[in-house]
Structures are given as C-alpha cells and as structure tokens.
Length: 335
Figure 1 (tube, one colour):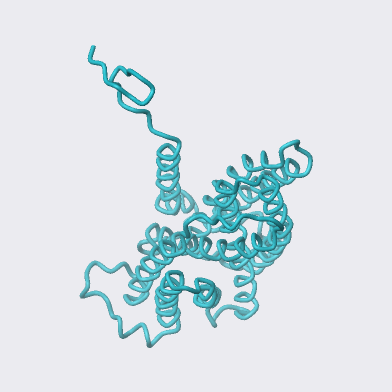
Figure 2 (cartoon, rainbow, N blue to C red; figure 1 turned 180 degrees about the vertical axis):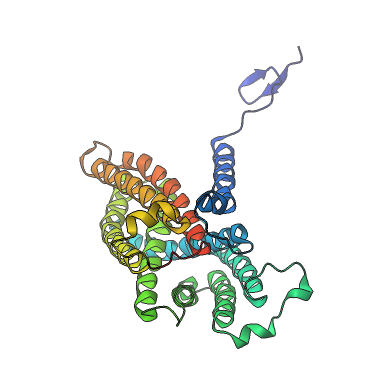
C-alpha cells in the first residue's frame, strides 16, 4: 500500500472527504433542482381531472415567475435584516457576502423571459423572429414586463454600487408592477386586488429573504448573545409579517373563490389545488416558526432555534415555487 505524508503524519493516500461547505453546496443544488420540478410538473398534476385547459408553456412560465419571486426575496431580505442588525447592541460588523447582485441577474433573466412571452401574445416564442419587442410598448402587460426587466437591471447596478441601499427603489417598482399585472382592469375591483397583492408580496419577500439572511449572518457572528438578539428582533417582526400575509391571502382567495364555492374549488380546480397545497405548507411553516420562537425564549442556548429556522427556510422555498405555479394556472371562474 502506498503511503503519503499529511499534516498529521502518514496517511493511506485515500481521497479527502468533502468538507461541510461542499456538502452544504451540494444539498442546496439538490434542493433547487427538486424545487424546480414543482412549477415544471405541477401544472399537469393540478389540472388532472378538472376539465380546465392549460395555457401554452405553463410550466416554463411558472418556473420563471418563481425565479422572479425568489430574486425579490433575497435583496429585500438583506436590506431588512441588515437594518435590524444595526440596532443590536454590541453586534459585530461582520456581514456575509451579499447575494443581491446574483439575485438581480436571476431576476433580470426571468423578467426577460416573461417579457418575451408577453411580446408574442402570451405564446411561447420558438425563435427571435417570433418576438415583437416594439409591441411591448403598445400594451399594459408589455409595459409592466419592460418595467420589471429595467428594474432588475437597475437593482443589480445599485447592489454593486457604493450605496446598495438604493436598490430598494427598483425592487419596489417590481413589486408594484407584479401587483398591477396580477389584476388587469377588466377584473372586478382591480385596485383593491392590486393593493392586496402588493402587501402580500412585499411582506412575503421580507419574511422569506429576511430569515435566509439572518441565518447567514448568525453563522459568521462570534457573539452568541448578539445572534440571539438579532433572531429575536426578526421573530417579532416576522409575526406581524405573517399576520399581514395571512389576512391578505385569505382576502384575495375569497375575492377569486367566493365563500359558498371555495370548498368545491379547492379540490375541483387547478388553482384551488395549488392554493390548498400552499396553505398546508404555510401552516407547517407557522408551526416551525413557533417552534423556533419557543426555543429562542426557553432553551438554555437560544441559538438552538436555528435548527427549526433552517427547516423553515426550506419550506418557504417550496412556498415560493408554489406561488410561481399559482400565477401560471387559470384563475377559477366565479360561480
């Protein structure tokens, strides 16, 4: 057997085991791949047996929309939690490397893909000749799609500048554009619907992205007391965010599925089935959040709350992908 020298003496020449960083990266890639299957395969499963017809390219549109939502969560969460961290007494100035520029790039590509679909009249383009870029300026949906593309480009430039906090404004423009896009003028009460979606999307982005960034910060902070204080601050704000998300989500659902038909539509329509799956997951997330909050208050080591919080982040990632799927499915008919 061939022996090789190592820092601890003599080894048998076997390959080094992957470190925790490598294993974590592989786990993230696997989770991302699995999450991508939800919008790609979800439409056929949700539509099965409902008698509804899916629009062309529903799976791809759902995936692009989920990527766009994720690209909103990351930078908004960073801005939110960095502000909380500055208010923690004695907190270290250590911050993890920002993911905002990468999120802006993902959002830009997703928004560009969605704009290309809008330019062809909501059909999947098969080549550059199918695109009608000039036609985007002639429709409301086209203008909103262009606004999102430009806003993500501006957010990326702001994230790379000396004042990354300025990316808040282009990101806010994306939230407004999404709220307006989801409720066209032909809908009953479009302004109310847009207002509900705006609050829902903004609060959800802060909740999901904020928890992700808080956990990233805690990994680099050597002061455990400061880490527990930051997690406690986030938990208090997250409780308010969850209440707002729940209220706006229920209200929006009742506007699209009246109370006397909601039970039938939750199981008999594709939109209702996806919404039911999202509700169940959000309920599971709420249980994980309560578990983390209990540990934060009562455990001898408050930072043991990070374990259920990590599971909460994974569940929230699935909720984001389901949200992308919901936007691509046909809206149920008001009976």
